[in-house]
Length: 213
Image (cartoon, rainbow, N blue to C red; front, side):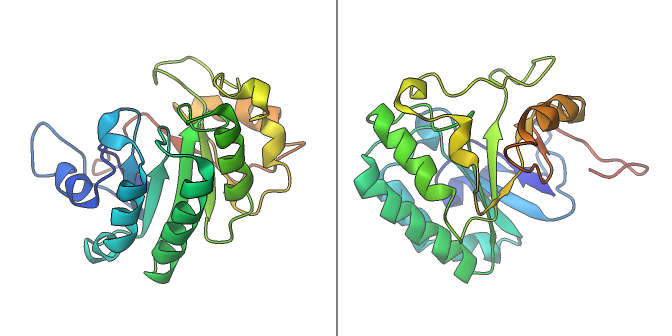
């Protein structure tokens, strides 16, 4: 797979922002291609209006030629009682549009929510959602680490957003790591409690005539 990451939660901005014809931008995508929606700053935050707009225009992702959509949920600006049903509706709409669904977040939960308890509630909902194909915790902070950062999300750790929430999950568990050299340590850490189905790398891969991404 390969993922078009821009940091935007707006579908149109995300599609337009990944421009492989621009010298300043991005390599061609290969394999099963995903459009990432969301990120770690204001452009990627999730509010009720943002997720409702994603649901409304999710067909544009399919029309743009993508195989799937990756919801990069790090900043959520509404409580879980409001947002969990809206996220669930969006994941369902993506599946109905013929898209695969990835949900990724900072370590064990989104790092900004209205309360630590909201972060816990989000993970409890997502690990049991039949419309999510892959959950991919991000095991890095800067993207330059020499090994996986296996800590739980510090903003909600005391409220219970631990790795134990992922035991018995329905989606596949495929952590995001900086590069493939981090996989052995990651797999050794999780595999007895949570089966690891693979991994996603953060480091940008640039394919050429002799290699595949």
